[in-house]
Image 1 (tube, one colour):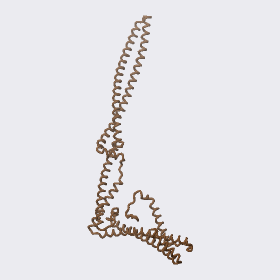
Image 2: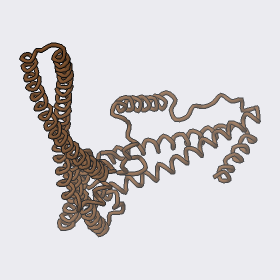
Image 3: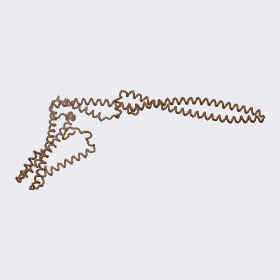
Length: 404
């Protein structure tokens, strides 16, 4: 438990606290300074006399003025130390009043202090608890808290729809590619039939020319019959290809139509997803559900913290009232030292710390008193040497009242 020289129980701000790794070096530095002070007092007593030629009037006057300034500084230090010494003594008297309070008052002090400690610890734990929620998300949830459950469901639907739409687009693109391949195959068949028709026409024309020149009735009839058969087959295949082409184009048009519809759904679904995720500053429904859960937990903790603050203030007022009734002068400091009011070992430590502080103040007071005494003794030594020296001393001492 820490006590400051000027401000019992004052808590340091978090940013004022030195890093943990610096504590060791700070303690070493303070110990070295204390040892140096002890060494100064041991080797030079309170005051080290200067070697001044007193016959030299300017040097003598300047020396007396330095003695005067040293006395004034010591007096100023003593005044500050006495003030703080009085405060520390007052704290110790307050502890004595608390120890001597009636059982009923002690119980009221204990109950209110215990509640303050418990609520303070709870508030500290809440303050240090970290929630995984950004400022933007918190602001959005503050505004649209009632919409969140519905929007979570909508986001889940949109995300499921997104998967289905992508699958549909993949299937439709595959179907369009297949139909295009079918059309290309039908076109290749038609091209082959046209080439065969041209060859057949050339053969038929040759047979016709030969018939006019030579009597080849039987071969001509046979060739004509074959050509007719082949032409019939070609016509059948061509008609079949045209029908297949018509069916394929119809299927392709339907695939294009369905693709357009799915693309429209895709665009609208993506826009809806973008809007809802931007609305809550999240990436998906899972994150929104998690953030919303964090937000609800945080709201409960914030409500508890507000309620705890109110209860702390109420118990603080009770504690102050009881301390006032038993005559405690410095009442506010016990709000930050409430643990000492419920834990005897803490109170022992408080008393020990105060006694240590008072001892250090007494030593500081003794030191400055010793400095002033030796300076006055040095002035008396100079005063007794010659009458003119005495006049100088009186004049310099008279200036102390003017310089205050």
